[in-house]
Length: 219
Image 1 (cartoon, rainbow, N blue to C red):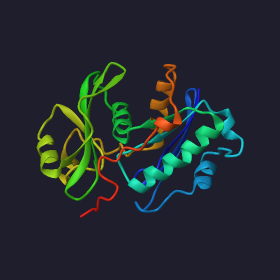
Image 2 (cartoon, rainbow, N blue to C red):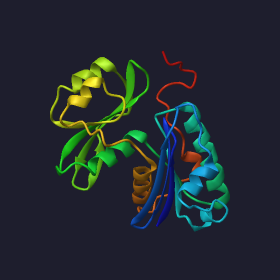
Image 3 (tube, helix red, strand yellow):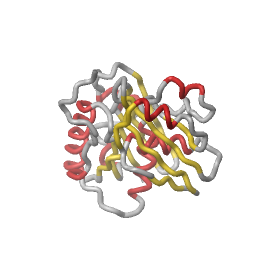
């Protein structure tokens, strides 16, 4: 199984090529409004953009929540390739991919993982997950949460905290996983698992998730 995944939803651009058990990932941070150079991303992992797509079993991208422009560009770019090459295209939640990455750092067989990604100075994109035995279950719907509510969550000690959207107090919490920064690698891993189920993933169904309207203005 060979999957190419992209995550350019925020202040970094990341690309990952997963082939069976081997994975090659490149991530570069940058200003949030900068857009990726696709050719440079492909070259960073040695992917041949002229012939490499014919060797793939699927494409995947981090579908948000995140930057509206980056999500829209990535979805449009990969949909066109998926249609031409007749490849399945999977849209994977940024929040879920970070929760999956976090689960790799946690020894407990069962625990709760709370993920918050910066949306504005006063609020963040949020979702929580239950880590089970080799499985991650979403507890509630993805939503936009105010900072005061996030601060209340930090008072709990029965879960792990992940992401850029937490109040500064999170850095002092013993179960804040600062090493989980997000990348295309967990997107590729989750996409591979879903492709292995045999389910069909049509490009037209792989759409960005914004949570906020496209005309939203940050304060």
